[in-house]
Length: 452
Image (cartoon, rainbow, N blue to C red; front, side, top):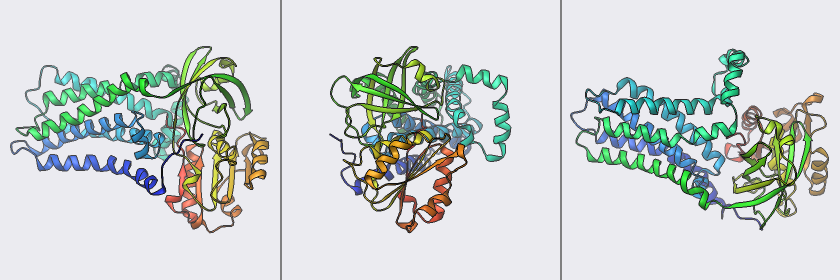
């Protein structure tokens, strides 16, 4: 049985656009309301600084809501992966607003603990945001300074810091303190803000925003795990497939895990060094009883997964999540995968008997290794279902670029739909090229598999 994702195309479009609209609109509406309700006795400079602080609390509260893993959040943002991207954007924007808050705000008679709360909240939130951005600094920093930063990252002190702070499990454990630092900052504003003046509307709107964020934080930490559907598995096989990829096959110990090809799951694996939790895209076909995931050696744990996981070890799977689905498009489709980004396309290919594509498919897959992982299986499935496959092994000098895609697909680009998954650099370059070739933005779909 395959669970449906969205009832019709109209609702998919609504869901895909409503999340970002709220992310932009809520702060704008709240800021306008504050300006309209500004008390007469509060100086504009101080008011602007405290408004920035209030907006920072709002954005942080919204960021907490977006990682609550609730079904309606996924629907609004067209996938938990996109909600996570917006979580990071809102959190970073909130942190940037703290700069004018510090520069402009003023309170001649602060409370006894207010300033200490402000410092504690600021240090904690800055640490969490910087820690989240560091693994993807190449995509954050301007191109002109990346070379300098790359040399700094290669130094011994930087490697020592990475050894101390690196690791998904350590980052995730500390990142769970986000709501705590939000609460400390919220209490600081409640105690020391002078912008409220005599306006009950400003004070109570602030209380409502902070309270909602803290309520969602409490739900995620204390209650979410009691409501999340979890499924028991055991490891059936661990198979190296090349290019630093390892395929783990999980055998269900209870009822079958239902999912839509292209979705991902939260996988809890017990390894020789304890339990580990990671989001992994499902590689299985829709009709398979076993669950297959493909792991790329990227981090401290995934780099040694083949040595730490063995058949018979227990696993727990939560989800599924995500809305990366080729049924969003009709007509000629282009699928583009890089490295471990082949995983959702493997699930699609393995499911074509049950979920055929809505038109002809050209599948482009590039890998750093020769032979290309899964090449034989992909070729067999493609021949069976009439998919044109274009494999690029960069180790053999064959590199995928937009010209190769355009030359291979003899169709008007305006009529194409494209689906991409892979390293950020490849996806960004190909997206730019596809749009320049004439494929409309609304017809370009991607999965964010590196969202943490």
